[in-house]
Length: 297
Image 1: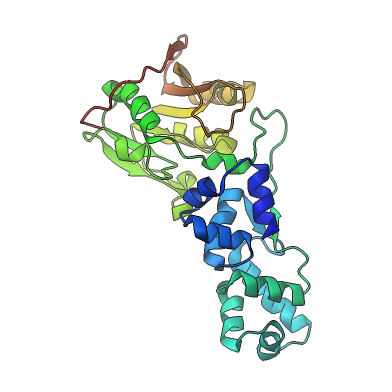
Image 2: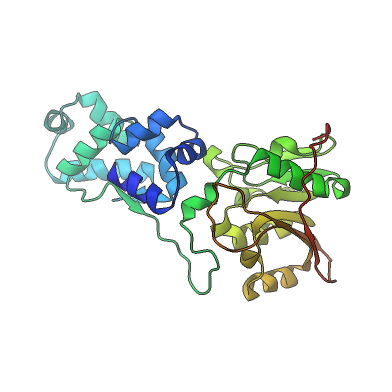
């Protein structure tokens, strides 16, 4: 589909990176960009590219809205099926949960007067926002070796329980020290971090940068120690420093990191920032030193 391809390219993302983030194969993504494949795979890519259905807010309502449009136009399910070249059971599945191929969905949408199958989600952002990158760039995967070195930098201070709120492919979660009780969230797998309320000792991850403020506010409610891999400028606006102060947190350490190759090159300094409850002193600024991964990771 043209919208998928155009959105991916506008975000500077490769087909391989989007496929990996969506949990589908590269051939499947290529098929989707040609208007082929299944709606389930399409929905996974939509989540990565922050796209929405063009006529309804979610998949269930989109399916119901198609049925309403069909009835409003005086078509039976059999008549719609005949017009788009499928069987009636396919239309039934389409109106239940969009359970059809992308090609079938596109044909049905055209017959029912849907002008645009996909649309960009409203950003909801206003005021001063440091990162103006496409929201899909939130889903760049952390190189496992970088996650291991960041974890190694803080491992000697970590104990108890640790939560990775945006697990992705497990770069952080899978490398936490074995002595820690590990937990994870990942919105593409139905575990939204903002729905997690169990206290933990540490929260550590490469969070979605466009949602960093929401993630930080929530993390400060459940953990006394937070480590974010993020651009420094995203962490140090007046609003975000005020959030820290109001929650009784301070920036204990900023570990300067070179932006990995293949990531969006924003020009801002990437850091691993340690946000610590009760910290009121100055910021310790260090530079990441790459060391061999220990056997305990």
